[in-house]
Amino acid sequence: MKLEKDFFPTCFTLYYIEWYRLKVKELQELDDKIHQELPFYTDLEKELKQTKSVENDQYNEIKQRILKKESELKEIITKQRENLITELDKLWKPREEEMSRQLKDTAEKCDALTRNKSQIEETFQSHNALAVFTASGKLNNDLPTRPVNAISEQKLVFSEKKIIDDNKEAFGSILTIPVFKVTETFTSEESIWKIETFADNSNILCLYGESTIKSFKLKNSKCETTSVAGVDKVNIVDMTKAKDNTLLFTVVTSSEIKCLSTFTPDSKIETFTSISPLYARGIHATNKNILIGFKDNGCLVTCLNESHGINRPLCLNINQDGQLQIGCSKIGTKDGLSKLHTVDISL
Image (cartoon, rainbow, N blue to C red; front, side, top):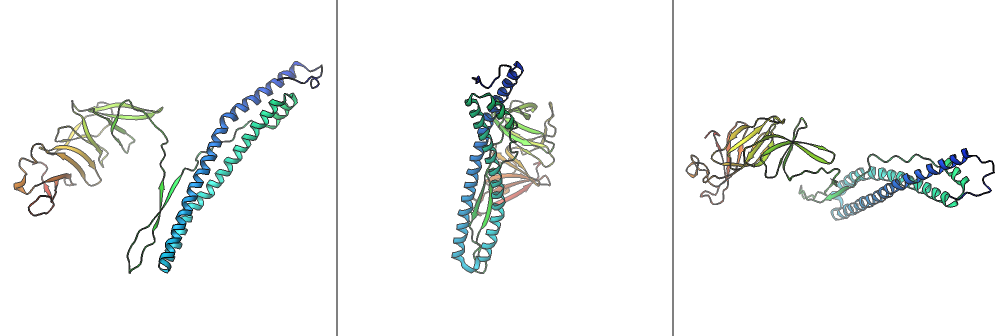
């Protein structure tokens, strides 16, 4: 930077020159920080404007549809219309106010950073040492704090439906549909086939085409796995979390449903039950039942077949009493009836 001769007296000491250089360095560092931070607030301002515009359009469009529906149904649904508009206002107005507040705050921060950056640029272009000292004293070196929870887009839907009651037609309802956004991504070396999370925060997965059950942790953008237990030379087909916090799973060409109750290395796999001679495939546990998909191994069952009334089976279920239930299709049957058979699981 070129210094004006008339600014410095002949007695100007090296101390003041060094002080000047320090202030120049501080301004340069502040300018670099603002340069890095300004795009964030510029983008955030655009995003908030876009979100507010989209949701405002949704609000206006839904409100117009509600008013149009009111004109069609007149007095019958006037009260419902008022309730729905009130509900819509409750959903939108607080968000509108919060977005306006955040948008104002963001715009102010963006303007402040822009002004500071412009002032620094003007100071450097002036080639004036006094301007450097003046700007350094006036400008605030602290950058604004970034918002912790910026508003994300939420979708509002007006659902029209008819409910006939004494020849009256229901107006409809307001639905709030979150717009999902991926917040974090973790990579795995292999394709993940099945995944379960348990009450004790144990995370379990099975990789595609493998016979090993693994626990995993999400760390540093990686899905880090640890082998828990394995089945000899057969791939895992499906798995589910039971209500007692155990893992039930099925394997290729097997009638047995396997069980794993601990998730530490070298955990022991046990047999929960068998649906022999059928092959267990898909499995899903609820609070009351265990639903099992199966594959017929040649014939349905050697001792339970059409002579027992079991014809065209579709699905299996194990109820709370440990009984096997077989659901059968009515298609192609002589009596045209679908049936649910309960049998002893030990057969």
